[in-house]
Image 1: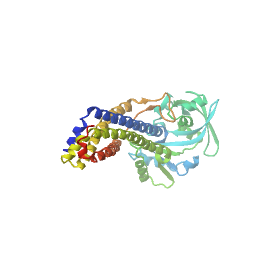
Image 2 (image 1 turned 60 degrees about the vertical axis):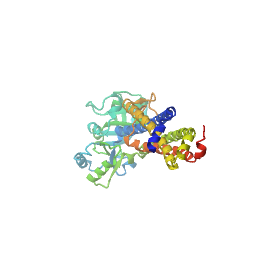
Image 3 (image 1 turned 120 degrees about the vertical axis):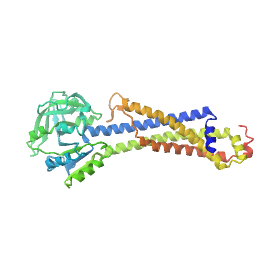
Image 4 (image 1 turned 180 degrees about the vertical axis):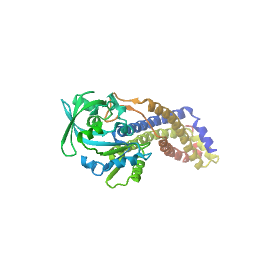
Length: 403
């Protein structure tokens, strides 16, 4: 009976209920869409970092991340690679040469992280081609080809087919200087990455140094970005070598993992602030409803409706209003997220702060579960003051209340 009465009471004053439902729907729409934008921004940043260089997990010789020298190459890598190829999860890997050196043109010079790759293997792990603005991805057969970032090309004042001299310390502590020809230029959302990283073919480095070596093996797999630990566990099962350091992308770049996690926490804080403000709107509306219905509530209590049921009735009315507003706002925001998640939302003319200027909002379905409880708790808390006020009414005085 109480549930039916509460539901009917919601629609007695359609204007007030409509305004409250609309305000809840708009508030939640704005809050959830903000969450989706923040989540999409963080996911885009992580995904871009993974598909441009990092991969989901990597193997190095212990000490490489500190010294980054030729001596820290992976021992016995030729026997290691066939083992990885035989595993369905680990077969998507790329064995790389990683060198710190200097890139110079006739105009300028710039410190570089030079990554030597096998282009066909690298496509299994990263997709730097996605960010190409000019040129190709090592399609010709010419020796000493290089792919650089747009920021580096701008600083060195070079373009496609220009020459760039790469200098680095060789395995025998001798300086190696090699002229490379630019065949591709990429542009990501990170100017620092574009300026400091260049890709060459590892066979060219091997030929120029006279030795074959591998410093890094990067891995990629389905859902590896969200659960990279599965990859490292599989590697440890296949390879038991205490001299190797096996790490997920979260361990390699903890600041990136922290950024992604903080973005998720911040989005809930923003929604919490919006719900806090909506709570006052619900509180005000229900308090006014109690004043207007004081005589009615007095009559109900006078004819025997106990105060506990009156309390429950007010709380249920508030929950109904909040859930209807949440449902309307949720349906609208799901449609908006799906649309902009597919077409993108351009919020600036250029990339800013290492983030892309085009957002693709996204929000996992499981995120709506805590949102539901947040709305429910807000409704219950907002209903408590007017509900307590209602049960404190004196039936004898309330029945004579004329408003």
